[in-house]
Length: 281
Image 1 (spheres, rainbow, N blue to C red):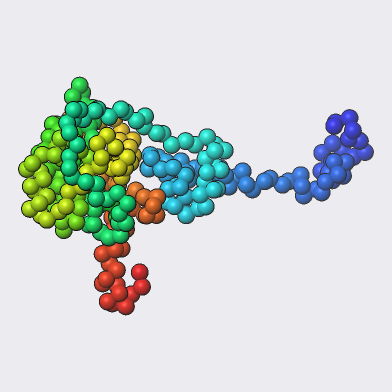
Image 2: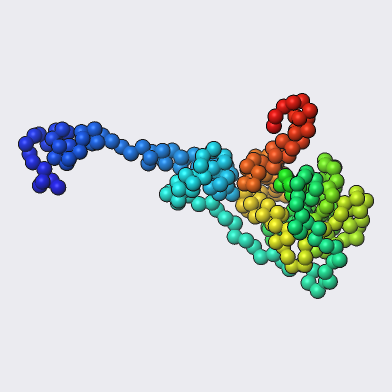
């Protein structure tokens, strides 16, 4: 290329260089805008990923108000990947026990109202050679965690405390769904449901996908909480769990809702009052 350029003008002549290259002079000064915009967007995406560790491109797009295809393209361009927690195998529960006669009442059910169905489960958190157990109750329609409890043992008391926590702040649901773990088969627990006129519902034995809402919640929760042993004592771990549940309910965008669960629930609660006041929601 250098040999092809004639020396009829000083080497620093932009006009002559542009003429010999067959382009306009202004083209020599052109810098594509897209890479600069992509770099700026990359920085914004990284900020969101730092604050919301489990956000994929869809949630990031909602958070930034940008088309998800553009977010995905920039994430691929700069190899920005969400850290996914490797799924740990669940411990087999209640091997050899006969299936409960309680049916799955939510299979094929259209869930269209607040407190129509609550789902329950618990998970374990490894903590310095032992385990800490977290039980949660989630409203399926709003995806909000309405009750929870933490103990160092998993038994009927753990799940009962989580249910009572939910009932202390919310009206009783029509249906309370869980798996067939021994904790949920406990007679006193089932009597508690009956006392509140709540219909019990259970997934088929060895069918965790029938309680997929809670499975999905724990996957993101553990990733965002971080390893439990970064908290030096149980008090700090408990506070971190409480903060993480508050974040999930009030700040973390749920893809299906396009907003945090508590915000969605607040909008639902506001609708009757807004209609009465003549305000569009």
